[in-house]
Image (tube, rainbow, N blue to C red; front, side, top):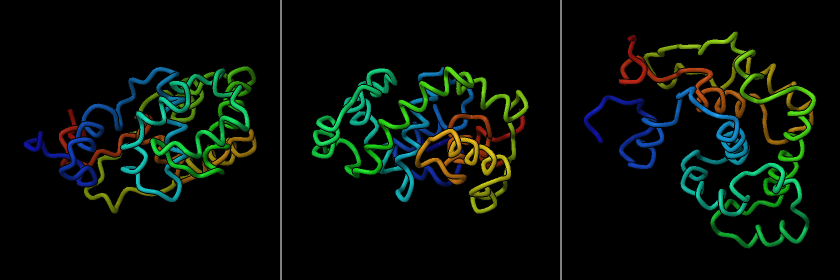
Length: 188
């Protein structure tokens, strides 16, 4: 697995390398995958992505495979149970935000449409490709992520500021920030 030139951020960890190779920056996501990724990115605030990624299976189990309808029905007893679950990040604000965001997502589907359509419209229908020469050249936020974060906050989503919005755009493949030296960032 180490023979391919990759973005430096994924290092030598097999979990990170697999995530980098198979998911990060790959725009082939269905709506359920986008919703899951959105929720996981909201958990990333203030923490390393490794922390969230290493607990992804725990999140899937704890949050009912990210079924937004089932999640929206979770109550205070579920929150208390989740706060005892070491398979997830046990932060009351973040656990409550997961449930709140599931409810908000259902409303978003009714009033705006799918995440898939919304985000592809935001990037003009095609992936933004940057091919930066170094990780430190990739921005933490952009005017686009600022705009999305503002719209999502107005709509009622929590833990989705501009930095999280940009990380989501990268991870979901709406923006391809694989480095120029990475085998996934090279011009084809």
